[in-house]
Amino acid sequence: MTQLEPGASAPDFTLSDQDGVPVALSDLRGRRVVLYFYPAAMTPGCTTQACDFRDSMGSLQGAGYTVLGVSRDETATLRTFRERDGLTFSLLSDPDHAVHDAYGAWGEKVNYGKVIEGVLRSTFVIDEKGVIVQALYNVKATGHVARLRKLLGIDAA
Image 1 (cartoon, rainbow, N blue to C red):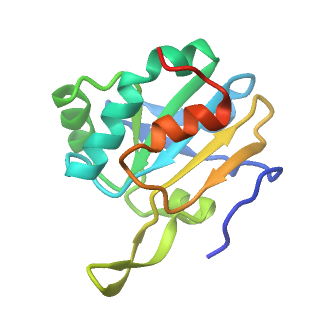
Image 2: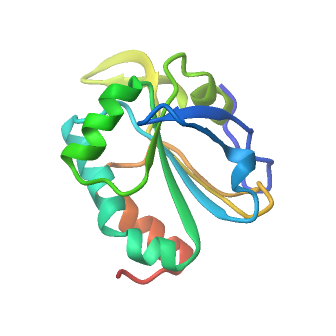
Image 3: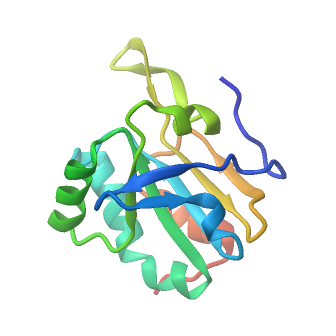
């Protein structure tokens, strides 16, 4: 697994959102993007993280960021997650984890003392030209969005 570094070009992709609409990273050129990878919709940690992003959307959007969450969940599950928790950003489905692989967000991790292969909770900040500004791997679900805002110099809204 190769992890991306700041200064690298963000791998382009097209994935379906919660409504089955294709979202291409290249279509977001000219905007700053926060792209985060999480293990599974509607699990406790992923819900905490998604709700933290939801609650920070005012400050993130105010600073010019588009937030996209990526998981291996099917679009119907993502739609349920978005509706259930009032999420105000797009959730993208990557069932074969090809985009996870491209970003180094898939690999070995320790879960309850066992080494398994799976999603490495990761966040990438991508600038208007498609260049990675921040590559944060193995982040914690709780407190991550506040840490990210601090790193980006964004006050809470």
